Figure 1 (tube, rainbow, N blue to C red):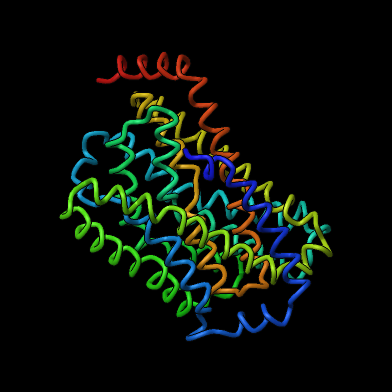
Figure 2: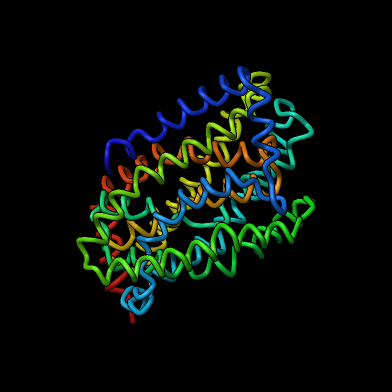
Length: 348
């Protein structure tokens, strides 16, 4: 993890302050930016999201799908947590905390929007940063690569139905046309472009591919930070009026990350997987594709929405939370391996 990635939470916090200040200083400028739309898609944000996502998707090697059988237990556990547990556990936590526990301290007209943002955040597993977390835990690189490739394949087909289902269960109107457009615009097309570009780069050699990734990295992170400045320029007044909102929204995100990572870690121990598989499995099971969530929230609900704010809180706490999970799984290696060895002995 480079210095910029390690202190991502600091840069996000600075962008929050810069966005709020700029929004108060030049509100007309940001209102003009907000009106640059085509088919309900804000063009400046659309461009920034593409610059953010495409370099990350360049790292995904879909040929690794052929390797999923090598660690089928770990793959099965991660798929179960990613797709059958995480979106639904987040929805449950959102309903509990946003509609019940924290409702008196949140703006009543934004409660549904906050829930929608939290659902969007948990509906897609992380793609790019997972490789960093896996490396910090000495995770199996082939498992990590094959799991990310499989998740990204499933995401193309499962993201919209899961979001639509959970929004419907939450009694939140589902703008299906905009949701499907967001998936096509911010997932399907970037995946296709990234894979075509990846093949072209690899034909020039691995060194050329690595150089391109290194050059694109700062642009990708810069686009993320610029998007956050725009978002908080629009959200500034609401945040200044109720600064406690960000802390309250962080609570369900914190709980779901720790719960899902612990669940994936424990299930891998139960089935006897190696620690080098369980660590990336726990990290993939817990982390979120927040870039896609931010893009979808802005497209579906707008810059001013509580949904957009909720997804950005996920960005704010992602790095310190995942570093905490890294420390926990590294520190529990002995406990894990004793249990996994016992599970392997008990296999028929």
